[in-house]
Image 1 (cartoon, rainbow, N blue to C red):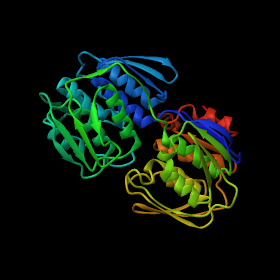
Image 2 (cartoon, rainbow, N blue to C red):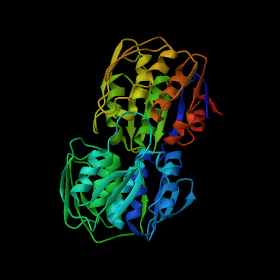
Image 3 (cartoon, rainbow, N blue to C red):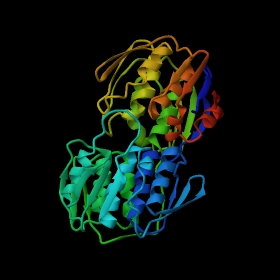
Length: 417
């Protein structure tokens, strides 16, 4: 298993370019199945989750070629292989986003129940509700999801929770459905908007993405034949922002969309971190003492759950008491016990964590349980006194491309084995 070795105490300084968004890339890769002709995707991060998704769509019948480190050419299938082994789907949660495209294009889908990080219950009921509303018959058989339909038809779907995955699945399925589909209480995340933009570039008619009501007018086919660039990854950018703040550094982030980072920027500024915007760059630096703050995770445009663990590390070394309330995933506090091993004072009560700031953390051997917990432990290692060894570090590769190399360029003492 991969491990990171970090000697803390180094101030991060310099500039770093942010890669394409993991979650947007995964959804768009699924959407390529809808196309009639080849598509070229730019700014696609060559991370393990993306490589797993590429392997899955190849098994389904797509043909893919990496033209460059972040440029992927995808030729969609004329027909699909229904029996992709379970081991391919269990690697990542986003494989469930193939349900909508497969149903819409081929009238059937047979995929294994997805895997992914163990961060809490992530049911498929809203996906099933939406696809059933469009006319599909969905069932669970021996660990597989089976869905069948003729041509799907438009429907009005209300989501009990603004689920990103359900919004994306329904949106993709509705692109080839007959008539209009209206998704109410839809997720507003930037990744949903990016998927809608990609679909529209291919010939779909999606309106309202980024609001709580998305309308999709079905078309008979999606030509494809487009070249599309994925948005920058707001969570990768946020991780570098928090790392810069925690180390008292001065880092310029390039290739970002500042609006996507506003929930995090607001909280960092509240904690006295300086965040300056100029075009598609953000400069993060610390020039005065930081102060404790409170955070509640919420669906976008609220504070992102994917940044909660990293912020916990920053708050653990700020004097005073901070509170984090996790409203999305119940297992997002799994990193707490590892941070306690490093000297953090964190008390968890249900979905709330109370953090008492300490003068500093101490390096030790820790183990990551999921992608964002791994990112948090990286930040903890950067600020800790002595050496930190992070085990199970393969989780981190799921969402960050060559993270250790880029941190070294900013002055960190980090290596992987």
